[in-house]
Length: 88
Image 1 (cartoon, helix red, strand yellow):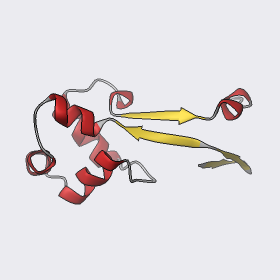
Image 2 (cartoon, one colour):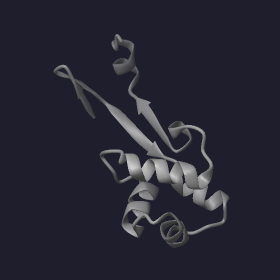
Image 3 (cartoon, rainbow, N blue to C red):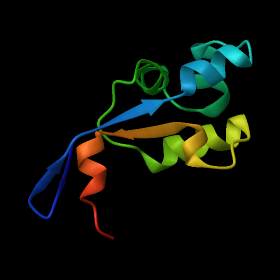
């Protein structure tokens, strides 16, 4: 959920870390030790249990997996009625 100028938008952040780990035939413990991120952080991203995006963690994971964009790691899924009303 996102609060923006008094309006609540419903969204879901989907982390693709679990898929990336599986594709590279790695495990969470290996990724944690090779990136310097805590196993708890890796586990939370893999399970999608996070309510904020930490810049250091995301940057580290993108570099580790050679990702060009944050959208290769995290996808935002908006509810249809919310994105229609957004004016930028």
